Length: 89
Image (tube, rainbow, N blue to C red; front, side):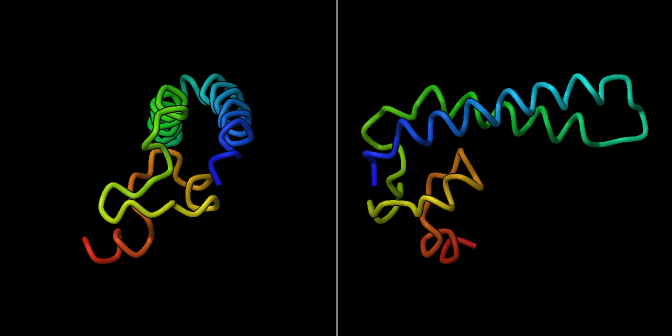
């Protein structure tokens, strides 16, 4: 799966650009919570891009199994597989 890190990196970089555009679009909007959510997502993407080529990226912190690609695409900063996340709730 981790031969796909470069593919994930490109996807995250594209999402980061789109997020930055959306943040600029919503700036000054006092009625929307969207800028805060976008800033949070941007921070997640930046943290992920910083650690994407580390050994533990995409590996569950609990069980050490690979985290599903679709989960990493949906939640870039995820550190647990779905099974472990469910057990920890």
